[in-house]
View 1 (cartoon, rainbow, N blue to C red):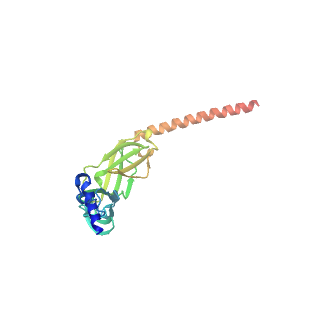
View 2: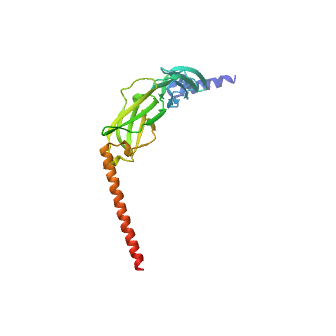
View 3: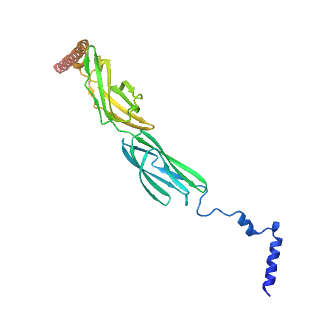
Length: 265
């Protein structure tokens, strides 16, 4: 029978192979990674940084490269709403966000390995208005007052007063820890002199939220002589009178020289 020599030849090849082992047996002992899993994969959570108004909602998308994930979850203390998913991704809705900063994690387990991606949601409210009042004269000093309305979170707010572009006073409101919209009034008293006349006064509000900076400012208010003390008014009037006298003297001298030159022609 022809099959007998072929069988003997196969047995002979197995017997003379190195180590006397079977190639098929070695493959069974070290199987390749199944095509449905991945030993190395990535996870992304987008957007990584999102800002919403207090009480607002936001959607986060978690995607990964694992073909057959064992589990994929969004971990957060925020209230979750709807969820949409597909192959390799899932979108989660977060509702009524009020904490000024919240960390969110997307955790995916694939082929015995767990990876995660993080995002941060920041809640803030730009000031509805920043108003600088005209200065009020009190004795020999004048009072500056700035109103910052409907802002959040107040604990990360810095309010500054500037005169002619230079900061004359600022205050950080770190001591405020409330979770509601608030109004802030900043009052500062300074002494005014003649050099302060016609200088623009402005109020500036700045929210610094872990790298996200939100700025607002008031319209300028000009300090006029009417806001100065009587002594300052007198000094300012004397300075203005002296300046006018100098300009008149220069003008008269120029006119005399002009008339003299023309009379010689």
